[in-house]
Amino acid sequence: MPRVSDTPTPPLPPPADPWAGRDGHTHTLGMASIPQRIAPAAPAQPQVVYVERPRRRRWPWVLGTLTVLSLGCCGVLAAVTAPIRAQYPVRAELGATIAGLRRDTSPEVRDAANELIAQIHREQDVTGAEVAKLDEPKRKDMPVVLVVATRFILDPAGELDGALAGAGKDRPTGVRSFPAGARGGELRCGNARDKQSDAPVVVCAWIDHGSLGLGLFYGGRAMDDSARLLREIRDDVLVKA
Image 1 (cartoon, rainbow, N blue to C red):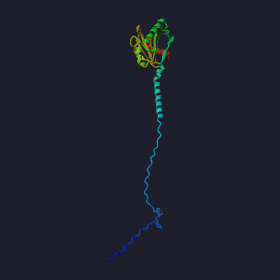
Image 2: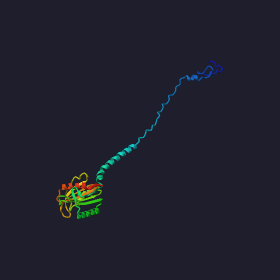
Image 3: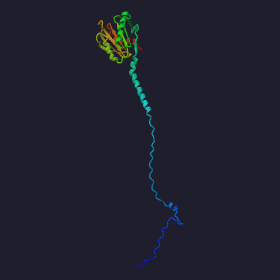
Image 4: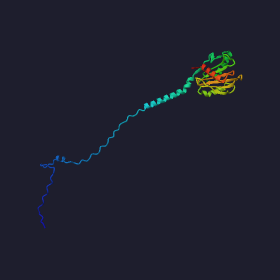
């Protein structure tokens, strides 16, 4: 059995610092030469940049649209109201000669005409009224009684039938429409009988937005000729106010 020495074993020297210099101090310069594992840097987060977009100006478009609509409405309004502006207001001026016919100025005819004019003003809302008896220069048996009233008429076609119905003794028969001429409006004629003498007459009437004219044609005048003559009378007596 080996003998154990009683002498204690001296302690082992500390391990030498591999980076220590000759003077026994550790130099950090040596550590810098050691490649070290560096953790990869975190990827940079993309930076969100908010760019304010310029706002579109809507007012020019709105104003442009309103302008177009206004012009369109004005155009439509002008087209719709053109006949009214052409026909109203007007006045009737009756001279000594009308459409080749001579106006009867005898006292009895003038008195009868004034009485009828006063009646028209009492019963109708008119701005003016004229009544006259017109004679053919060569045919005294073919007189024409003319009644003209001026006022604003909103629905000319709707009022024409009533005017014709009240002209003769009974409602006219065989009513026909005829060209109204350059002034526009409506012109119709029919066969009727005189309220006083019961003689046959041709009743013709024109109507537009500014006037109503009624003619009673005696002496067996044809309806076509009566319509033509009333159209000429209308052109002769109406004056734009």
